[in-house]
Amino acid sequence: MVGSSYVERGSPATVIFYDHELNRAYLVDPGQGEDRPRRLKRSLEQLGNPEYHVVLTHYHSDHLEAIAKLTPVEVVATDLDSPAVRRPDIRAALTYGMYLDPNDKLMMFRAPQIAVTKEVPASSESSYGRLRLIPLPGHTEGHMGVLTPDGVLHAGDAIFGDRTIAKYGIPYHRRLCTARESLESLARLAPSLEYVVPGHGPVVRGSEASALIELNIKRLDEVANLIESSLREPIGIDQLVASLVKAFSPQELEPANLLLLRTTVEGYISCLRSREAVEPVIVNGSLLWRLRP
Ligand SMILES: [Zn+2]
Image (cartoon, rainbow, N blue to C red; front, side, top):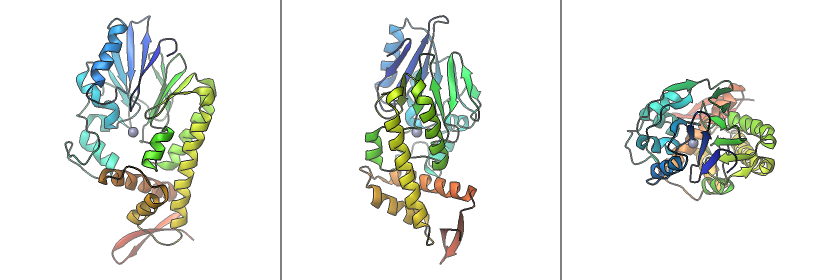
């Protein structure tokens, strides 16, 4: 791609950085799918079969499933996301908002427990080898971007491609307000980058990333505005989910999508709670929420 940085295409994409001096490769988000471990091994073969380390942007199963068939020297994740990488039950509970058996077919992706061998701080920038690890929280609590010395940023799911946004309608973020701040950080960073690699979506040049970043911010604002206007009257989480589905007509609407959407809505309620902007009301045994007067 550029210098010693390569992209293994797919959804999610993997960024590979090869450090010649150490004869060591880094796989950022090995991803998922039957064929992925084989494709990654082939890429490593082309680099002369160096030792390789895995770095994870976040704990979602589709970003880490392939690790089960690989033998990395280390697996790196942030301290906040690491428990959910290690434990599929915690991963399911955080992702879907409820406990699910790790093999439950309800989940779109399932990955086994993955041993994290090194934790890095989620709250501040750090480095791992020659990689820069940049906090981009919101999609998950400890989500980070991983930047190679060639200026290639694996942005994980802090940003989605336009087709992914069209397909799902409402981007999944555990905490929407934090995800928006991360998109603003990304907007400041992007002009100095060669490439931005979204987990799901086309690779964009850093100098041309602003349109996609704007598209993501715009959709988050539309979602936030709709939730806030609905909260003028007391409303429950599931009614909020239904109004978002109506407004943004996702192409994919399985029970799992609705659970994910519920988590996103609850995450925005949590943002509003932090601003002391919303309060709970109990009506006929249901917990509703409304904007504070
Ligand atoms: Zn994700």
